[in-house]
Image (cartoon, rainbow, N blue to C red; front, side, top):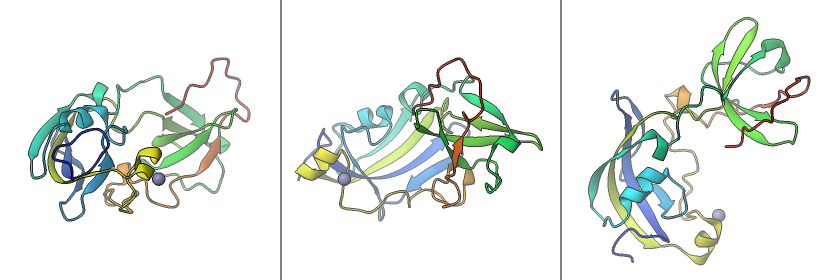
Length: 199
Ligand code: ZN
């Protein structure tokens, strides 16, 4: 049992994440906390840093600037593609996520920002890029990570994979089986600049 949050601790956290406009983006109650490995970049750096040293039962409001959260919004990181280039079997929906492959076979995730009869706008920015994040956190438990967990860089005890995301908010729903589709946009694209969509 560890006294305080430090590197190598598996931390159970109840939290609410809000944006500055008050919108609740995500939350985890104390009976089903988020579990993460401290110091392993499981959570955004600005939050992780400010949790260091907290004890079980501690509550804290943590403000995370975009640069310490999901990064600045990059307007260049958006591509408009012809709709007829996309596979016909994809049921396009605003806010859905697509796995997009480049010519080296690297996959990156984009979300559908706009759909018109001819064009689809794919945004490779994280949906929370450019946003200041306001967390209300409560430390539910702290324990030492096992050797396995340290080696893997994440906790093993709970299967909290992606099931904690808010199903009602389709902008942030990574769960739907139909959400992740593979696209190969470079099939007939003359693009002389390198594709840097690695997130
Ligand atoms: Zn593992």
